[in-house]
Length: 98
Image 1 (cartoon, rainbow, N blue to C red):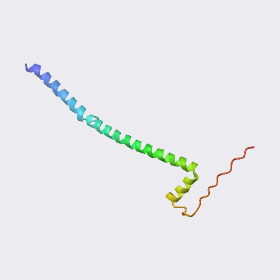
Image 2: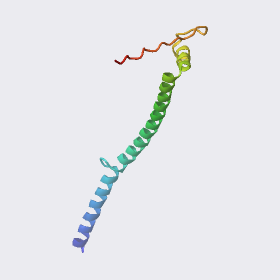
Image 3: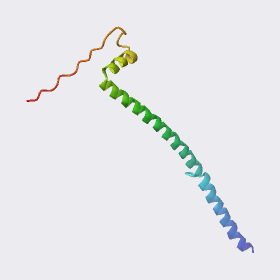
Image 4: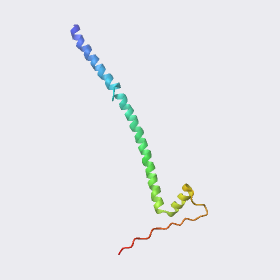
C-alpha cells in the first residue's frame, strides 16, 4: 500500500509547489495585483492630464480669438502691463497675391 501512496504524495507536493509558484512566484498573483493597482493609478493620472490638456487648449483658443483675454493674461500672469495702460495689438499685413 505504501507504493500506492507515494505517487499520490508526490503529486500532491508537486501541485502544492505549482500553486505556491503561481500565487507568490515571479509574475505571480501578487505581481498581478500590484500591476492592477499601478494601472489604476496611471489611468487616474491620465484622466487628470487629459483634463489639464483640455483646459490649456481652451485657453489657447481664447487667447488667439479674444484680445481682451490677451490683455487679461498679460496683466494677471506676466505682470507686464500696469492697470492704467491699454494694450494695442497689431496684426500682420495680408499677403499680396499677383
